[in-house]
Image (cartoon, rainbow, N blue to C red):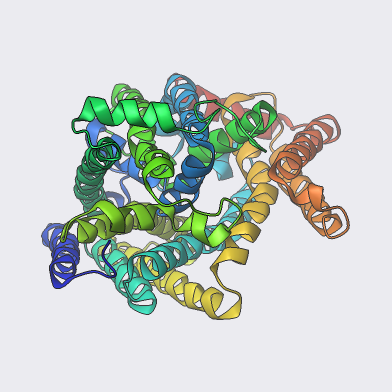
Length: 504
């Protein structure tokens, strides 16, 4: 086992970062408008948008949390990951065309027309802090995982990745982000395809054998009992159902993922993009999590109740089986997973700042001024995320924040996602019902979170997400009864749905 990363590994990591900057410079040389910068010119090929969607759907936390689950429970993280497949397929069938027709300049600009301008502004105000918090947690995750697990300095992990993400997103906008996503996808594929073969070799060597088939035989014969069950421990079918609703809400309404739908060249391409994502999400998990499952057999036993040991499973097995240079590739892959997600979120958040805040106050800005605002917004978003990451690191540390973030997002996700989706499908929903659902859901969610100090189960995802979602829908239903639309508002809503249905 190696004790640290070598000079060759540092060279691999440096080369990876240099390529990212090169991509940003390449696209910066091309004349761009703010529409091109944010993808609202709708010119992105479906396959590139699909790869980017896939890369934006996970981060370095997958290397930590899901590998720990694979080592501890076996097949469970594959079950959890596969829940994304039907969620994306539903998106292909029901959301792809609607998102492409609804969103124009930003992922939430349709809210002003479907509901009210006030709700659009409220979503921007509430959504931006949530995006910043989410991005800071992901950046802290990659710093913690790579710093503690792989021996790469924590401070520089955060600084370098944060600055480089801002740089290529600032330079090239969405197209640079998409191109970097594709390169990062290739890096992850190289690691994901290599590591299982090395682990199979270690398995075969346990009883003096060799060959991939023999490695599988050793794995299946020595794996713990119940290692291939779909559920285990707290991850029951009830948990899976609630998680499916949560992940479906995220994949359907996350700003950067919505951007992938509406940036494609055609409505048909938007659907093809989603089908590609579903395929990747089905194929990837068994390959991705097999090494951590195999580590349960060939690594020295780890304490299953030690959170630190579990979080370090992926780093431990990589340092046990990878040759010099490949550790650098794994670190690059971990950076890739997080950088893709962050770059997409930076660009989407900058789109909201530019189109929903700047353009509301600017008086007929020129194309050049809009482009400058887009790049300044990117720097502001990225700078705030990096700063917030260091505040989190020094104030509380990573572990507590990760647990807290899951609980907080369980409170805020339903009140934001349900009105967004309801506005796309329910024509009879009054315009003021969206704000009622947003405010009512968040109020109940915060009350539940506070009550969780006395009754901790209320902060668990199964309860917090379910009760907050129910409160959001009840609030919208009550508003629909008490605050019906007048003739003018109904005319606006009918016009919006005519556009969604292709009749306008």
